[in-house]
Length: 335
Ligand SMILES: NC(=O)c1ccc[n+]([C@@H]2O[C@H](COP(=O)([O-])OP(=O)(O)OC[C@H]3O[C@@H](n4cnc5c(N)ncnc54)[C@H](O)[C@@H]3O)[C@@H](O)[C@H]2O)c1
Ligand SMILES: O=C(O)C[C@H](O)C(=O)O
Image (cartoon, rainbow, N blue to C red; front, side, top):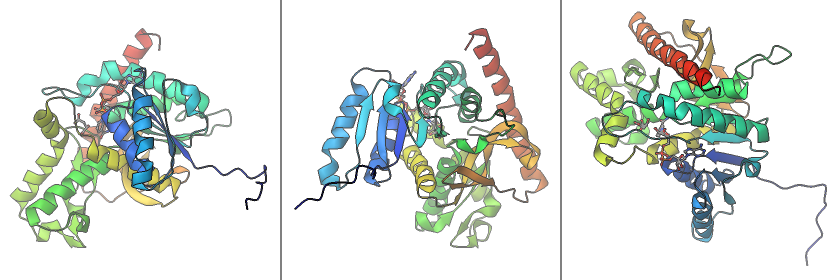
């Protein structure tokens, strides 16, 4: 016997919209659905493609034992009311390119995506993935208005962030675990700064179940692992020849989504809009943040050495130059 439902009770799962249903976007949709975190809307400009991916993912639900809905679409109207919007739309780099070489082409795509998404989900938290990551996150902050003061002078910068540090840290942890032959989950590391050659891995903070790696590895070995981490994205681009990494990037975004939706307050390296933290202003760069239901709950200011501070500053300067470049291009194109 079924009881009739009370119409005032609305049972709904959170909704995460993913703009760009390519390799990172579609893998992320799978991770979110299979972790039973949220219903997913996959949006892409290619007609039929996100719809096909969504149907394929829906058909795996009975086998994977979850009941999350996955919708594929080319229309932002279907993203309405999303708690989180993840932007992966844009081109990946090819062998020989830097991430900064994607600046011009991806800036326009990302700004358009951000404007469309916030128009339909005004309360959403934005997670940017598209490269060059720090600059794209800055542009999303501007395009959505989240990093500008509203009429009451309030800046909703906690609702916009970029994913890079979780991935770069996972790479550093992987290389440490491979070197030492230990379980990857026992290794903890933190990589700050921009998502590029000037990223700032922090060996001082890396450890295996609390034992600092400086007690387990000699300085030249640590330096080799740091350099491999800095080159981690390019290493995969060179091997694959047709685009970049997507399994680990999707895992990295999914832990950020999880920490927000489940209000876990995890301390993760996140590309955040800074207003004075670490002596940096009006810039997006990777720093340790607590992620909870409101987005970025706080930025943790580590007691960095002078050398680490200088590396972070150099990293931020290069992001700043590219932000200026992107803004000139967008202004010239009247976007
Ligand atoms: N931050 C990171 O750590 C990280 C990690 C991996 C990839 N990335 C970046 O993420 C981006 C996507 O990578 P990918 O491997 O998924 O690439 P991909 O080519 O597989 O997918 C990109 C998708 O974006 C879509 N797209 C293009 N313009 C669009 C628009 N205007 N609106 C909606 N969709 C649009 C394309 O049709 C394509 O399906 C790249 O810029 C890549 O460099 C960043
Ligand atoms: O390296 C790339 O171009 C993709 C991504 O930023 C990565 O680090 O894997």
